[in-house]
Image 1 (cartoon, one colour):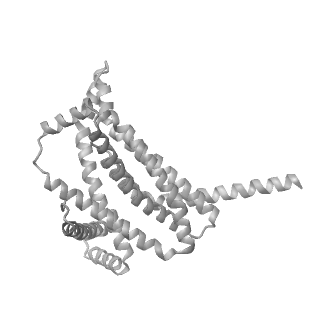
Image 2: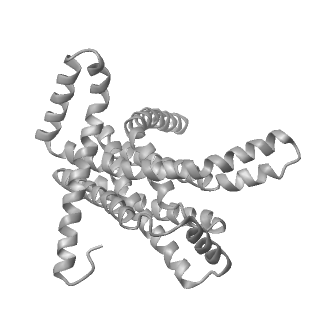
Image 3: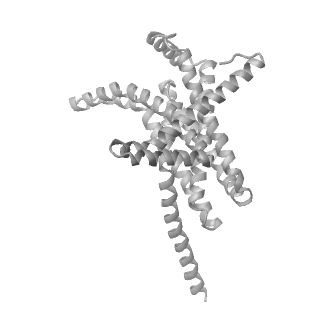
Length: 312
């Protein structure tokens, strides 16, 4: 009887693991679209740090991301069990914040455009590298705080999508799948972010090798790295509008149906309409996010003025 019970236990475990593998694959497929945005946003958030502190900053943000998911997974399960109606409003608040943060970045960049030269930037970075003063620590702390805050919203969206994918499963399978997704996403995203921010160091290392091939490869990486980081910065900001706008449009059924209907109308036009209809929903999500961010920024700036604080 003991042997039979043990075999039954092994069979149950094997069944659970098989179900978890299938459900995890399903949940991962649904969250794949957000992972690219997550990667771009986080790489952009931690860029601009003194080279020797880059990995430390990424590690600090990764720890914050783990803590976010450690809180989000049980909270998501509790909300799903006792207050499923609250998931959409919470996600929409997060989406509004992403849109606001994206517009604020654009507004800040436009305000300070042309006020500093490349020489000023190089001088400031050199001073920060040679003299680690409290201001540098504050800059790092601000970057880490901002990155962890943004990660919280994206993580909530990823967990919510994964939870929706396993909504019909029992609690045990839901817990395992969400835990696997949370750990896998964090390790994968921040591992790639660490690699991205150290591209320039890799290029410098290769230029010091004896073989000409590696020297040219290193020079190419050093030439491309700033362009790549600049592109990531733009993509990361755009992702805030796309992700935030997508959350908002999906949370407002009427607006979501209008976007779907418009995409179908464009597709029915034929010709280039078929190709454009595939990206039209994403573009409309981004436009929605941009408009929402501008509105929220206007409200925040007005509120700050009323309190006698600087509007920026």
